[in-house]
Amino acid sequence: MDSLINDRSDSQAILRHALSKMHRQSQRPILRLGHAEDLLRTMKLPGFREQLDNLIVWMARVTKGYGGTVDRIAENALGPVGAVDRIGLNFITHHAYSNGFISATTAPWQDGSEDFLAATLTFAGWDRYETIQRGATNSRLAFMAMKFGNTETERIYVDFFKPAVAKTGFELRRNDEAQRAGLIDDLMRVQIRQSRFVIS
Image (cartoon, rainbow, N blue to C red; front, side):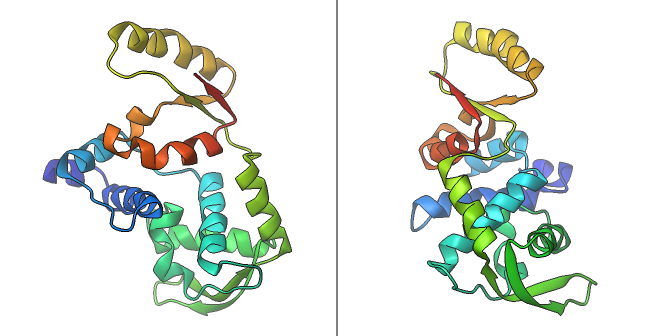
């Protein structure tokens, strides 16, 4: 485990993001050593568009209604958004702010970044949230639903489906590529929602 953490500069961010996703589905997420090792071997942090969507979804859940505010985004949203650090989160939050998805008061941090205080989703932010909930995102992901543990279907998936989908400009994912089986139920809805299409 120590070598996996030392080999990846984003290891803390990956585990923080995975725990945040697990926490959405249960009161007390449990991350066993084997799960953590698998996550560090296989999971990637979300890209900037997915991080923007994660920020909007997180704010909608935390505020629990139109006009509600979120205090100190930089202290609370690293895990849910999937940013590596506060500077990366600031980049995403500033984009949301400058594009009218959120309104907020800003305050500087010592590292030169800024925190967004009393932030609220604007009408455009809530509209984007509803678009995400309907599954109409700009995602380039496709989701493959299949049985695990069958060598023939595994070979077909790796040798045929993945390359064919890649030629269309999409990235095909299965849950077991990013998570262990124990996490699949918790995250399947999120991955399906973020995918443009599903193969089953």
